[in-house]
Length: 388
Image (cartoon, rainbow, N blue to C red; front, side):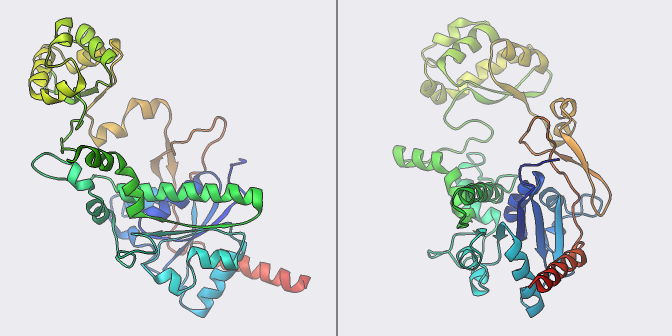
């Protein structure tokens, strides 16, 4: 297929989640991604778990459709091979330990100076300057430093996010920068050096609670599975013992909820509930009223009423329910991908292009493509020598 990134070659010295996720999104749409790994041990994310028939679920998620070359970049041979790859590459990504890339001349700015065609991306914990620039960083630690835990969880207990949100945010901003760099190069012929840090990425995601805190002089309260500043918005028990979620976004929806769902327009004009701020202030009484009505209905009946009232809603599913979700199954949002341990079903990327399927190639073993890539580079070098 003629994928949008078929003519793009990516070289990545990557590990964990942020950098591999950025390069995998490029690979999904046709880019050739050469993943440089430590000989024998490879990317340490390979050993995060053994959930997928001995393979790490996180590694499998972030590394399909790539080629793996085992390379010690600290040796002369490794440096020579890396230089040959960079001379051919369109994109370079690295998330080495703090300071390591600059010491080896592999930071984005140095590389674009040597290879003007490159779009080069540095991924780090806290950025290349400032008092934290040499500090190691992992996802949960950045969630702590950016204040995310302070707004997440229950009033009694802060909680981390169940996903690696700092890593995911960073990977997506790196992808954004790479695509901007490729677009700029198509117009100017010049590459681009840029950096993305976990701290800066999650700080951007913390903008609303930060601005709220600055404006109000107090932080957004932790509210568990409820919305902190909108009511009603969150979980509600139904008569069959299940939990449904719904959210009211404006006064038109509030009136529709009271009249169509609850069947009681008088609640809409109750002086305790006539504005969102008052509903938040009287949340406990409001939720008791709603759950008293919901107790007479099953979760299916509640969802049907909410749909009739055009109120956004959802079931409190677990991960097993997601895996068998009808929206995934009926839209064929799975694809079988080959791995060392055999085929595994994986979710398709969220971008849907009519008439074009994403690549969804195999997840490589450590150094699986080393011989082939070295042979390719040697053949090219011989061709250049004979041509000169």
